[in-house]
Length: 473
Image (cartoon, rainbow, N blue to C red; front, side, top):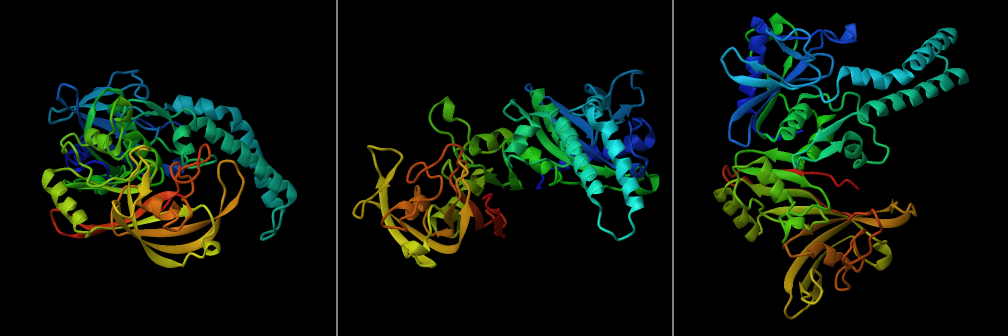
């Protein structure tokens, strides 16, 4: 995943960790139940620079996994480094806190104990069956049955471990890993080790101690003087496999790109683009960007997506970039592409595979926020479409039906433009699946509309930039 914060400042502290490990002022604890065949694979070290509510600077340090921990050479004998943070002073005199794992090794061992003996027994029986059958032969029914029983127990053990993980998020709420994974699908089971990377530990500690993150970086340590001695490690990005699951939930944003001037995010459906009126409508993409990047302008959003629409959204961190991007939007120089599911079969309605609609809508002042057709006073909305295919769709109720996958290319940017181009009789006449305003929406269903591609020129460099984020449906 793209580094969610600038790396430069934290990178300097990652190099200091490696330097202190080499000179012995910092060391790694001995691994607990660490497999010998993984002993030489190395670990990841991470640093997160922060400031507290008084503006004071602080550095947080972490190690990937749960089997090792950083220990100062002057570490207190008997101190449990896996249960709480420990203060550390770099050789340069700067203060830091060594962050513990989210879940301690003892907790994980206890969660695995229930099925551990039976899993080992089944593994031995499976290995015996493999020896009995000739090479190349298909596993017999007994071996297949044993393997299935072992998979069930292994899944149960992994689920028990995952249930231990909770993370403090940027809004200071605590979210269980299972809840975060449930957003990806009811039966989604994350990879082993999810929650044990440096970044989730560092952000969890920062947010739980009311700290504002400034810079994040991770580097690889390979336990080898020949490998690490005197060399500058490459800064790493948080991993897609595990951190890509956790960090968007913890940070409140799925950041696809970030530099000094702009941020590109994948907005989740159900979140406002900008704050609404009243405290209950304060949470938004814009609000979350301002929390994560406190130096940005007051209104960083360059454009908006409907609350129920998901997908790509661009925000500017400074006034000059905001103005330059707004000019591109006003001149129609920014191109966008949306994916949607129409609640019906377009072919049966006689809708052409490709076309352009030109519609005129205005606000229905007596039924806000609905828009209504008004050929005389309405604003012109031009939408190009491409029918992709007819496909099956299974809503929360479980009753499968046929829908039409379509791609929209809006040439203008009017309120509810694509929803109206779909649902209104002057347009395609088929609402988008899950549309609460112009169609129907089952309990637990979302609007099947997603901004999947956007192209523009960088407001400072002029570089052409295109981002693609496939629809989650």
